[in-house]
Image 1 (cartoon, rainbow, N blue to C red):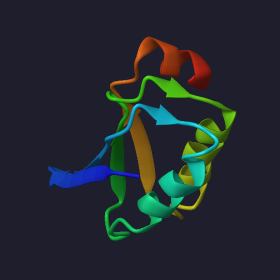
Image 2: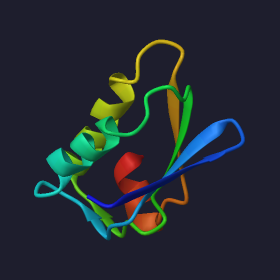
Image 3: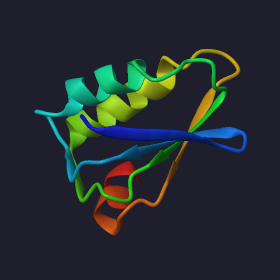
Length: 88
C-alpha cells in the first residue's frame, strides 16, 4: 500500500494514498505501517483519500494502534463521512 510519510512538528504524518482499506488491502496496510520508522512517539494517520473502509480495514488500523507500544499514540484525521461512520 502506498503510504506517504513526513515529519511535521511533533507528529509523523502518514497519508494513506489509497481509496480503499478493505479485506484485500488490510494486510498490506499493516505491513506498510510496520515498515515506517518506529522512533516517532506520535503518528497522525491522514485518511483523506480513503473513501471506503470495511471491518477488515478497521481491524488493521486498530491492530496498528495496539502494536505501537507504551508512550506512543496514533491519531486519525481527515476522515471522509463514510469512513467516519465505520469508526463510530
